[in-house]
Amino acid sequence: MADPTRADLAAAVKRARAMFAAGTKTAIATRQRETTIDRDAKGPSLVSRVVFPAPAEDGPRQVVLDAINTLGVGDERYKCPALVDVRAQWTGFRSGVPKDEPEPAMSEAEKFLLLIDEVRCNFFLFFFGARIVSGFLEFGFMSSSINGPATRRATATKLAQLTSGRCLIVQPRLAPQNPFPAALLDVLVAYLSLLYPPPGSHHAPVLPSHVVFAGDSSGAQLALSLILTILAAQQRQATSQVTLRFHKRTVELPLPAGIAIQSPSLDHQGDCLPSWYTNGAYDIFLHRLPTYEPGFPADEIWPTEPPRGNLYCETSMLCHPLVSPVAAKFWRGAPPIYVAVGSTERVADAAKVVAQAAARQGVPVLWDEYEFMPHNWPMILTDYPQTVKCYEAWARACSSFVQGDRVRSAGTFTTFEGLRTRKLDVEHLTYLTDEEVGRLMRSRQGTIKPWTNDLVVKPVL
Image 1 (tube, rainbow, N blue to C red):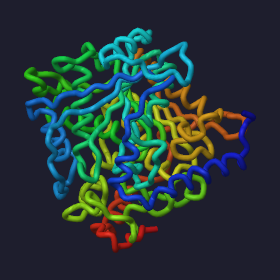
Image 2: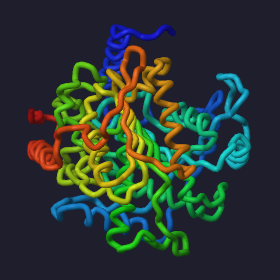
Image 3: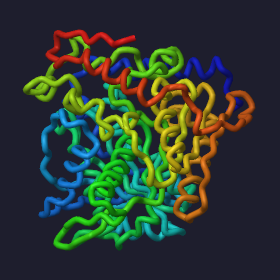
């Protein structure tokens, strides 16, 4: 296509916003059923489904609970989840096949071997798709086109193609019926299973230096929450070699080679920071969160019993770093981080706060900002040149982390017209201080009441 104009972009954002709004009158359980269908993989996407068994030992759960206590203030309430089997999908790029090529009619083990044959480097992308919260995006916005196990295949396949590696897309449990920290526990079990394959696994053990945590939207939040969990375990055990019991053996819980995220949603309340309001006219998100509005249809899972004020977690957890990484004050020791963000995303401020804090604490941060791009633009504006450029930078960062290249913090801003770039100082991305962020989050948290289908929650401006 010809280079898009600002009018083209405005029209595309308007269509995307309308698409999200169209489904906000559907009950949550219904959206779960509709948006979590596992469709066949076609064309260049090659998928092998796997189920990682829950360990008999309580080690992973204790790591998560300890991290909650280490990083919290002590007044948080949450439901302690059980350890369960975790579903995931190996995903790779299959060359030389038409886009409508059906999924191979073979066993999952045979499809895994076929996937391995396509891999040219020992690289693993541990991919967190946009975490499904009841078939809605993290902030309560419906999108049947970008949720469910099949919805991140195109992204994972593209990254697998560009890196010559393979991806593991994790499918954690859903909220509201499985509130925090269930999803975090699931991705920890999946990560440990990647490093230390349980009996019967198709894959061989993977070195953590060959793994990059990747994700977009709220999947990026979950990726950073897992990093914070590992850092908290290191702090608690006073060592970088954290150990736990997992499937009848003592194993280490190491950090991965890096983190590579796009359009991260890092403030779980969503509407705490200024960009939620200043960027409202340009992003795909609606101003109000439909799942908390009066008249939103109730069903067997929402409102919860007893009622909660948030789909994902108890209200008391909303300012906890494992729920909202923008609240984290300790990033030192984290692996290199790549962040791609649109300048007009409602959630841009939270991404800036996290990137700036990490860089100031010595973590190498690659900041990649695109003028006027809305939330998750690579999945929405698939034929835009900004999408091509972002995928290339995203994959390049992943490869650099695994190769062990020396990474220095650097920031770039890419203009809409001409894709011209200028440098940004990653240590000075925003005027927002930790104190101001904390004040805004606590102020918003204080307004939230349990949702019972007849309450209007008014945001603090």
